[in-house]
Image (cartoon, rainbow, N blue to C red):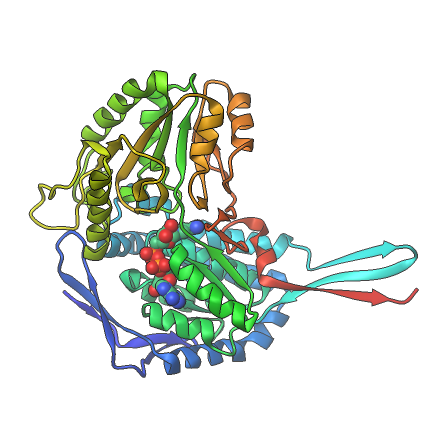
Length: 474
Ligand code: NAD
């Protein structure tokens, strides 16, 4: 059955879209059309922004505790529909259930409630006999744009913190994952979110650009690729509009010479190619001491050969398809390019998968990779790993930092302090030591991986307020 939507969520209701243009959604396993949604145009976007603008004065004046109660209600309503979210997301983006489970957004809305309750909106200061108040207030209308790989959790990071701060929102999901955005709109209705406080417009880059350019948007919060982030930053730069940009990555896993190889292979799928490598923090570059190189390559290929690969609806599946035909072709292009450049595929390679249908790319492991090769430097966003040897730690640091990105990373060692010390030397926004306990906070990227925060962590409410100083006499 094809889910056809002709409406957009504006001012608390599902209203017919003005545009006649539609986007088809395709299931990555069956390659069949499963839905159609409007490609909202500038007039649709303007209607949503105006609704958000009208809702702003009342919402921003509400006491933080009242906003927190609404965020708690969103989390409750989201949880009640959790199974529907999981099924719809996997249907659209083909993420295996273990990954879809991880991207449950209810805790993020609860984090928003906690942020509203705990973030001090006013801090008094006294210095040199002068009194002042540092006063934080909502910015206005936030344009929130998210990708498809963790659609709800990445959108929630923006909406939760914006609402906590008193801002109102126009959200634009990725076209690949639009249907769960309609479910989210129902959740907002069920939770009693006041009309216009959150509005949702579906569409692709053209819709996103209309939102970024709209004159009544006060801040843009974006998560997505570095190339789209650059285009958005150019517009925001010319308008002097604040922007949070969470962008691409090309992360690395570094094994120090005392690393536990068994532990590394036990977390390899989660850290190196989660959701077929379609995650910003995927540590697809693996840097290994030369003395342990052969053993590590063997362990990686043995692990991947034994990893359940196939239908994402099967609860045992660890590696599923890529999200779209375009993404599959792009990843295959990187694999072909690496082979042409002289890399050797010890697993996978430029071959069609054994599946009769679906956008599958077999897990591929390259050796003989040089740091200048695109497969090493660029974000492939697929199940493609490069394993490189290093001779000493200085070379490991230099290889680690040899891309323009700096989003995440993992260091493996038997000695936590040694790994932590090594982590201090890396140019990246987050390092997991032994990948044991991912920190609860979101993080900023270095280099072309972004700037300005965006959402997800408790302190991220600070990205959604303006700060002013009120000087008092006496
Ligand atoms: P994308 O940049 O193609 O699209 C992301 C969103 O931006 C979509 O909603 C898209 O419609 C919209 N968009 C695209 N071009 C736009 C433009 N010019 N103006 C306005 N909106 C535009 O990315 P994607 O393929 O959906 O997602 C994958 C990318 O997201 C990867 O690069 C990944 O690393 C990155 N990502 C980063 C993080 C992070 O926290 N840093 C998290 C998840 C994903």
